[in-house]
Length: 359
Image: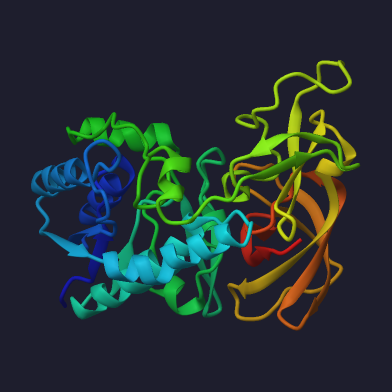
């Protein structure tokens, strides 16, 4: 009987490297696949893809697996980056990692791996898959500080049935220790941050190359003008830094926070104090819904939800699901709920799915 073949997305980072190593040890036929998905201004200043490929090749050599490099730049630009820009242009704050996972890592990548005869694909995500009676569930990663199920909520049954998360049961410290024990050269490599596949770069400067910026007024909720903003796309709800309105109107020393955007009039609305009532929302509406099981959860059951990555799970109830949207009400008002970001619903450790916050 031939070994089951798994294609691992080998990014050059320690997580995917250990994922590939563990699969090899478990007896799979492992193929590494390095994805290059961004070519515009791909320089060493901002994008580390050249070094990442070198690191991936070094790891593949040590654990003795073949490595293929594939370019999904066209797919990324069409399926992810174009939507990313459209959301910013509309005054919302999108989550590119969610789109990237759904459209590239678990669609274009899966299609390519299928063409290589793969039974499964695997990544270095901190998440887990469980099968119960032929249905596949997405579970949180065991390491709560690294859990990445939030970014994977758009995966469907077909994708989960073909996906392995080899390090989902491990803590980050253990992953690094395994890499060190097996003398992988990237055992201490810093985790990547920044925009998915684009890397770390000056955000305003980067966005300004693709979208025209339209400066406008910064106002309080009652219409008092405090200054000028550089363009609504550069700001997000809850933002404190970079507002350029030093000092305080009332002289009480409280900092200013972005509480809303008036896109129609190009006004950025700010309030004073982290705990200002305008920064809290008791409920939200989500659109573009995706439920992992293929069917919506029960209404008015007690669930938990995140409205941003690294947020503590907030008890909530889905009070209505209708016409492709749902309303979620929280037990306690949530801070800085941001249109364009994702709300992801959980039942204990099981990720049920979610949608894009509309308001």
